[in-house]
Image (cartoon, rainbow, N blue to C red; front, side, top):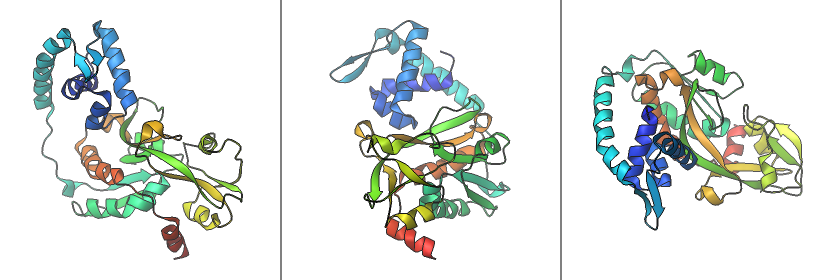
Length: 276
């Protein structure tokens, strides 16, 4: 039990008594919390929590462990406290986002960062080279789906999205391609198994222009992720060795709440943008 993240998961479970509430508190998915709990149970050879009508009840071993771990983490946190950080001193901010979030959240992200620094800000659409640019530190953070990635990439869960079929359902299906996500994945078949994509585009404005004659899968936040037929977790990405860097933590603290408020623009609004 020498992973600090695992220790925080354990302590948060002690506080919340629920894997779902612990996930919300830590900004991680419920499946991640359950996975860490399973690893801790195996490593410590103790169930740690027993499920009952009120949620997760800690074992006597877990109750005895909690104050020791709180003290240890407090000491480690104090030892690792960084020097004072000044956002006004950063030389540049570079962020790559998948296009729906770039369109809906990009302006607010720029305005919020600009209140803290006059440094150049570069916001770009996520591409096939974005992950490698994160690793070479040419990009500070990215916004993309939470997927299986190398340990060199840190992923912070933001929220779960779902989708619905939208447009002229008598027409052709348009598959909106997102780099590093759905080139070989047909999420729309979870909603309509016999649907077949015959048009493929990677430009949101173009897809919007086609919807009078065609239809597509429209992504939006899910109010009830567990029952949604399509589930896609969003994450903030950074180079793992930079995740505790003050600049990265500052950017995450700015962007995370903006992404959590994400609402897709209506296609009427998107059409107006593309027309201009």
